[in-house]
Amino acid sequence: MDAAAAAVRTGPAWLNDGFGHIWLPYTQMGTAPKPIPVVSGSGARLKLADGRELVDGIASWWTVAHGYCHPHIQAAVEDQLGRLPHVMLGGLAHEQAYRLATRLAGLLPGSLDRVFFSESGSVSVEIAMKMAIQYWRNQGIARSRFVSFRGGYHGDTFATMSVCDPEEGMHSLFRGALAEQHVIDLPVDDDSAAALDACLSDHADDIAGVIVEPLVQGAGGMRLHDAATLKRLRDACDRHGVLLIFDEIFVGFGRTGRALFACEATGVEPDIVTLSKALTGGTLPLAATVASGKVFEGFLGDDAGHALMHGPTYMGNPLACAAANASLDLFESEPRVAQAAAIGRFLARHLEPARDLPGVRDVRTEGAIGVIEVDALRDNPWLKQCFIDAGVWLRPFGNIIYTTPPLAIGEDDLARIADAMVRVTRAWSERFHGG
Image: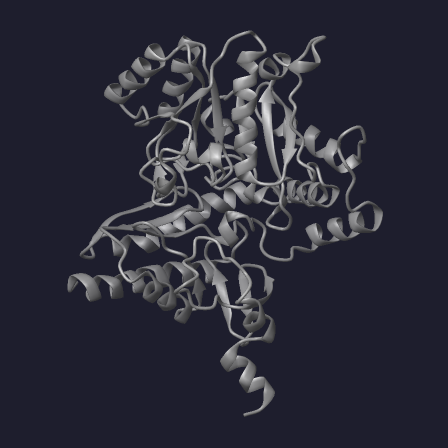
């Protein structure tokens, strides 16, 4: 066997050497097989070490909006790398962060115009929660708890775990170690709206804010709700004097196919919004917590103790901000929102044949999100391998088989994803339901 054939069979040396030292996400390392080695990416495709290609149906956890290795973003990062890879944002300023803050403020609706940078979505939510609590404390009011919703997911750090669905398997282990919050049903109808109103009324002295993923609850199961639900939230928060936080880490930057942001599409303006994922087009880690003028003004004054005392080391990193500015260029010059809407229409048609398969509960789409919900996923490793064999990269979880492809994906690659989802779901149905 020559060296090339051996490499295909055993994987590259870096994988074999490193697997004994790396700790992977959401993985039982005692039983997990080696992950699939990727050597490059282009457009919607990943090239593997053995020469195969997979169409990436989840855009690397929903980040790669414009496809891999987009030349415009690459050029912007390369140029910035030669000028200033990093500089602290405390006491010093650089153009990329200030330009990006100005652009985000101009794109977001209403008075959402004060941008605080960090490196990850989960941290941006923690910052939003910290802002909300301190906003009240700066007024001499001690409010420290939040209302969030069943089916919601906001991150894996400690504060964000506390506002996720408490039944979520990833976080139930930490029950008792997390701050207690009010987790209730989304106000999708009169009864649940009344329950929200009662919660805010009963705990008015202690609730700092309400946090929600607008339009789509992502990692909690890709559950959809409408703009009327968000309007009920806004009205209830206004009645009870509570801050409203939109976590747009998943849905922001065109994913819903309605507008660049859900708060823009629905006409419901939160007091704070969090952004990440597609902010840099899937190139470098960056997140933003954007506050309204009202919230920002709550930190102003002569008292130094009223300042927001938070500062991630790499906040506003010039390379990441350059990537984000280049990504925004593409959102402005290319029809990403329209592309997301077209993806939704395509998926709605092509996933529909799965609806009547035994074991399938629902088929739903929202922009560039397509979901086949089943009664319960069984033999997940087998499912994943079926998709790999079909030439696509998908990562089913919970009870859903889903796709969130790059917004710039071509129709041939999109068809390959949709066809694989239906064919593999049919095989799953036959295997476990005799369908």
